[in-house]
Amino acid sequence: MKIYTSLDQIPPIHNAVVTQGTFDGVHAAHQVIIDRLRSIARQHNGETVLITFDPHPRIVLHPDDHGLKLIQTLEEKIEVLQQMGIDHLVIVPFTREFSRMSSMQFIRDIIVNRIGARYLVVGYNHRFGKNREGDQEQLNEFSELYGFEVEQIPEQDIDHIAVSSTKIRHALEQGDIVTANKYLLKPFLIKGTVVQGKQVGRTIGFPTANIELGDPNKLIPADGVYAVKVLIHNQTYGGMLNSGFRPTMDGKVHCIEVHLFDFNEEIYGEKISIEFVDKLRDEQRFSGIEALRIQLEKDKLHALSKLALLS
Image (cartoon, rainbow, N blue to C red):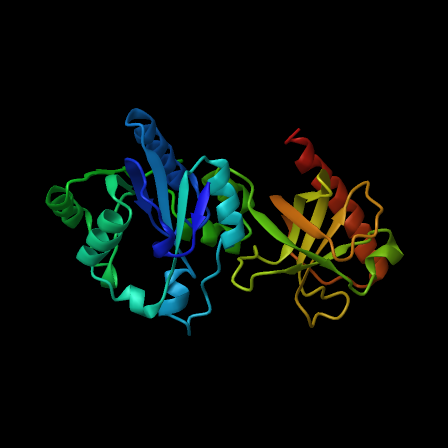
């Protein structure tokens, strides 16, 4: 996959089959669009082009709204799109100036003149251009005017619910990992660096790796304890993760810490990937360290049963 971080970098593309959007999560509905993109490219000996934006448009347009968190970091999105076989990924730097581009300018200057689209594939209720003024009706008009074909993918449902990034964010914010993973068609993932913590866990037989995330806009599921799968040193381990304030300890600083099963190595400074499997319980305050240890033993058995269902 070739990656471009500026529109000026894009070379001539043969029979370009194009889609565009934020693609946060690259979820089930996105994957249908990408599958169709690749199918058209095969039929017409073309090349697939996916246009996305960084930062997320809402972060630029509504900087005072700190509520938006991303299902995927840009690094994670690139990795998934590469696995899906996209030929060309265009990452447009999203600015306020860019946001003022009209729908016609966007189609004419970028989709047609810059990329040379022969086919454009969009999702249900797709909007684009200044103030999201562009819609399917305009796309049909522009396709006739500029000589490309346009195809709209119908709304995608799972269990009779339309899949969207917003619904996935809501599920994660509620700690509903099963629903989020179903809509994503893959486990929700976080990546970070192992940093030193207070090492209380190892005194009760549950040493934990404290995780520092690299992107402040990355969404973290609701506080609680989760069954997880952890990738480190190209090996996968089962584990359980706590996200929250550790009320039994001090309750002052939010942290993410993970205990790996059957693992006993020093990994400070190492990169780590964590896939969420299911939520075990809410975070809670215990009467003391011993009560916490007893609960962690129960949590481990619960997590192992959840992980066993995957094998």
